[in-house]
Image 1 (cartoon, rainbow, N blue to C red):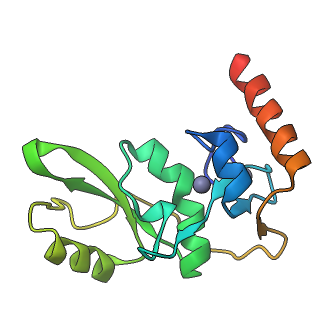
Image 2: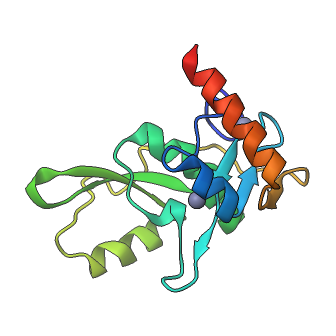
Length: 151
Ligand SMILES: [Zn+2]
Ligand SMILES: [Zn+2]
């Protein structure tokens, strides 16, 4: 597993619509494994990709690093139970942010009220790139992603 971005597949992201995401969205480029993680902010709604709920803990972990970079601190992944006992995973900077979210979303609960996953510490890496990729980089990355997934 990459110590820096918590993934064992350095080309797993973007998970969906890879080309569109890599071309149009700002990426966090992991300085250790080169994985690109969408760190784009929807200005209209003021939310990042990592603010959205994730279906599994594993997928949430793929975006955890971008939350830590934005918050400049460790962030936790929390298990949220919604309508019909549907489970999802959300990243919050701290418990206060979780409580704020729960107070606005009365149909959701967090049984544990503590993270199911949190890294031990946040170490900023000045070598990390946060930018949009050039067209040739997008092409190369997508090819590498294809090659890795075919193994
Ligand atoms: Zn994106
Ligand atoms: Zn990495």
